[in-house]
Image 1 (cartoon, rainbow, N blue to C red):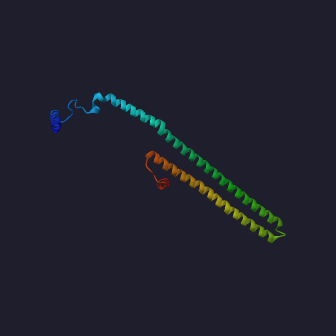
Image 2 (cartoon, helix red, strand yellow):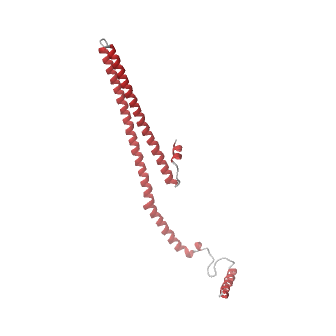
Image 3 (cartoon, rainbow, N blue to C red):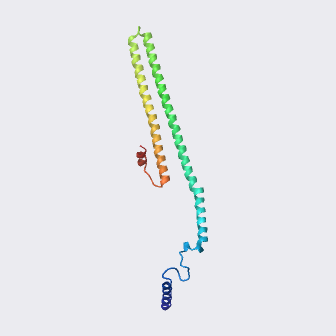
Length: 186
């Protein structure tokens, strides 16, 4: 058995020396991908792979990407609508506050003018109470306005940062931290 094995090895080595170490014993010596005999099978597998990748992109990956982009767009639009609504509410609260403050001051002045002759001390106490009430209402309204504005502005910034983070992750495939996105936005 060992002799048969060595005989085959010797024959193969001799054949390799005759061909100069290139190609096989029976072949033409051409590299298979460049050999025209293999072109039909290569074209078949090329088209089969191309069609499979095209179908995967068209039916699976691109719909998911467009769905994600559409969802993000609608979420941003909803957040902007909500921020606009909150801003209108803040403006209405400010107008109401201004109107009530003006009404309270007008009422206090009217009362003060009509009863100034008779009850000077009583007018002074009513003015003090009305001013304190107006200041309380003003302070409360201003605090509410600041809260509404801060909430609206903080929501816009966090939504923009989340959207940018998702977009960068989806486009580049790299995970980006929310802090890095916020620092880049600022």
